[in-house]
Image (tube, rainbow, N blue to C red; front, side, top):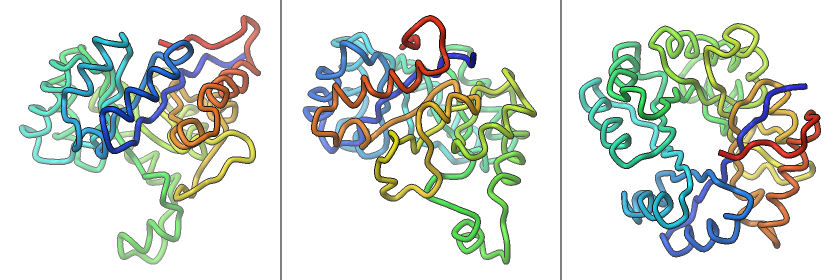
Length: 242
């Protein structure tokens, strides 16, 4: 049996009203929501407070901070003040930046290092970096090493690399896997996608679902299908949600 992966629903919508409507619809089953750049730019810290205070939900603030160490440290401190549970920084920002982010967290929230975005594969990553060849898994492991050395809570990687990272770092790095789709679902603009069940088996502690749930004809039913998929490896029923 593998450990429970916590499902997080991405509220990648343009308004606070849209976000709260989705969150309220799912609240019976889902206790964890992602606020990314689209929603945060439109609604700011208010939406985080509303999710926390009105719905008593946990928030994953996915803004992928990448700046000089002092600036990133300040951003992480602000996220902690908001009461978010998880926050992202770009692992490619370097060891000093990652260490500053971790120090600024003061154990009040988990800092996750973003490795390689799931919209990339080997060819597109090589092209964007101006190289002849890049192996995504090698790059993820390289960045995971920096995250582990800096003491981060974990990293963000696709399900394709999760097993390799888990073999090296085990419980030392919590793995958050985005780009998760239900069996037969559309990949959309993601190139490296997995099902919830596959991500969990590869070692994911958190799985993020966006359009697979929020764009479904019945989002509540779609999320319950996610829970069923995650429960496939368990003996005790549904996974813990928060």
